[in-house]
Length: 294
Length: 304
Image 1: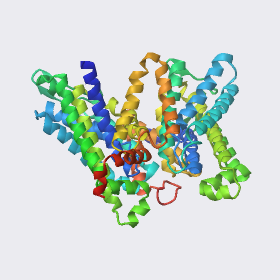
Image 2: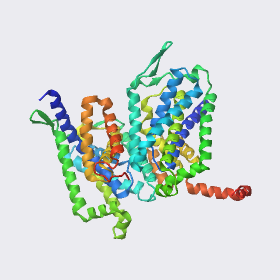
Image 3: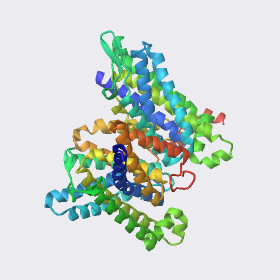
Image 4: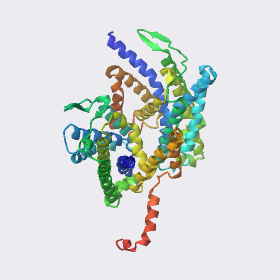
């Protein structure tokens, strides 16, 4: 095999593994959109904020990585609940632009809190795998990316059980299909919405902690790319579709790494956006969405 | 005094940008492309005066026209995607335009100086105002000439059939289509008008700033463009102005809080949206104000 082919496969592997974190962020955007029919622009920054709280606990206690991880997940879940209370609960149900703007305000706010608390400097994030590497044939498997992928897989498995095997999951699916009918059947709409915000917040916390440990540090500058990539992932997969978000995240990871390899950092995002445009024009429903955009 | 005049000029750009997003929001669409049109207007008009030696007035109009042309082009694919997909698609447009300017280098030598867009370094030397010795007052007047013209045009449009058509599409597309409104024409027209106004705003901004760079035209600018009408309200053209005042007074009025100002900024947006979800000047407020004014002017009823 030529060097070029080796490199392409190596980038394919890295992109695929890193794409699992995009998939988690995309799941968050897509699930909130599914039940509320509204966009939560502050979801990416929720994930980042959770990771920061985990990092804060790490600096205070020097505890093991598990503690950092759990703190990140729990605090992200709580921030998710705050988001629901502040930006969605009291808003008119049929006017999606008000919560859109409110979540934008929330994004500014959390961004500023992070910049304020860390003086805008990037901070090192503990990496459970260090710089471990594994040889797979002629290719290298980065330990942190492998860990990220396995953890993301575990979260997706748990989510599948939750959505398809529990009463809460049933209620969630009912609300995302038809909120009014679900309410008529005796489903407490507000409680389901709040649960989804907590749940997606926790998923975001996992994603934030995984991205922190794979990148090696956290910086307030991450909030915008996380938001945009989460949105792109959710749209690629079809807004509202969880399997779509997973496929979209993996696809985005692969395309980004290939674009980085072939065109360099200056054009990487451009390739991503052009792919997004192609999807919106030729397949507006996304990979797994309904045929027409909503 | 010069400080307040400069502030007034800045308000002018922001109001134009807010109005460009306002006309698109009337049709129920959220466009994050306004920052892209603004960037296009800035670069095109800047190149026209500084590199091609055009006079200022046609250069500004050219910036608006090219912005409008891009609005027209974005309008068509945008028809296929609705609502929140459009947010993402237009966001991608703005980012692509930004990256095009990040990678665009085309400079010429004018006398001693190198002028033109120089990639990541930005576009320096858009010095028409200074070469021609314009005073700050003249710059303010020139900027507000366009602001007032656009405000007036939108005010008249809001009171004409065109305004009713746009609002009908925004309220309920299906109902609008059922009464025979051409959705394609309405949406593309709104997008074109939005592109035109954003292009004008960018063109004026470039000449005021004398230096533009792709960094200025990112997601943040696009966010503010839609934030002005959403917070200010879409009940009337005064809405985006209220939005600009809200944000500008917050930014400058809370300065005494120092670093804490930025924290409060986000919280106040969240609070405003909870208190007035449809914006400060929403349709209800406009109707109540109109009802208050009506008995005072009985002659206005005669025309009904």
